Image 1 (cartoon, rainbow, N blue to C red):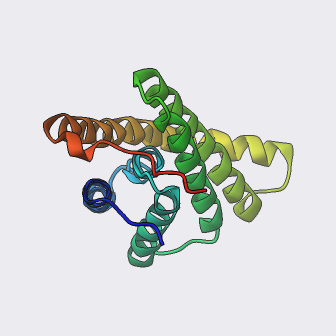
Image 2: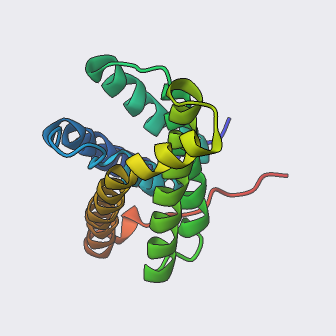
Image 3: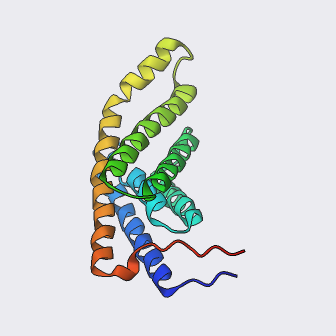
Length: 181
């Protein structure tokens, strides 16, 4: 069994606390559809957690709990697929993280989420024609703007909070786990 260092545990707890604190924001901005922290949380989890299993599992648990409170819908599977894409982009961005990777991963996450979730909506609710597909995506553009704005705002807060904490407490910096033979 792997031993966990105190520093690794502190980082995991700190990052988890940022993710959990961000969940409350999903309930604060209900007047702005899709302006929520969940995409940014998933991206952040992928970049910030050393253990990538936690990076994937935690956002899914957050989604399950908040969907249980808010309510499930028929195309929820596509939302969870979109969240997994955010985590994967976060894992990519976390390797040599910088502002360009943050911007690229955030934009790619928002676009992927838009394409995946609206395709799910199209399959469940729209006429199965080219015009139905076009109309589905056209009607979703206002939601995309909110998703993009939320991802950049909440992502900036999360990544900045971690960067400030790491600067103040260097022990919080990520350390890759030692490879065993």
